[in-house]
Image (cartoon, rainbow, N blue to C red; front, side, top):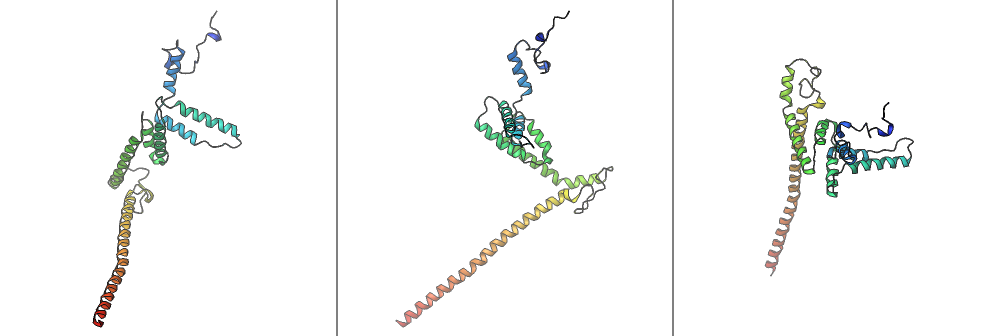
Length: 232
């Protein structure tokens, strides 16, 4: 007869025995090991917790008490993901970094994923990563036309039948044309320079009548003084 009873079964059989098999005799160490595995105190997990909290919305038919309970649970998750040395400055850093990451469109998803996998991420490191990403994207945009020319001579692809109405290259549409994008940017820069020059010329034109009035006034004063001396 088996001597195993419900009270002699190992505790928490579904909590990942592979992680705690060496510390099963010490509940405190078991808890710390499980926390280390399942509660990763990294910037990415904290950002996801922040996003969950800020993304809360009242569900249809949900009571306010239930909404508050969900908000409290989300806040508990955030607190659990903070390291021991977490400070107000750390929170400021997290919020500023998260704000920059959250506003990125879907085309930056791969970039965002690589950021959230980092073990540490401060604002200065994030800003450097943004600058590097911008440089890489600009370089790829400049080299877009040569790559399209090579693609035109290669084997057929699903996008090869598409032709851009702006640059006449095949393989992309006008909406995604990098050549058009760069051309528009250059034209906008020229327009801004011309407007600046126009404003400068207009200012000079406004100053010219004022200068002539001053000269005329000086001449009148001299003429009046001459007449006065003759009269004397």
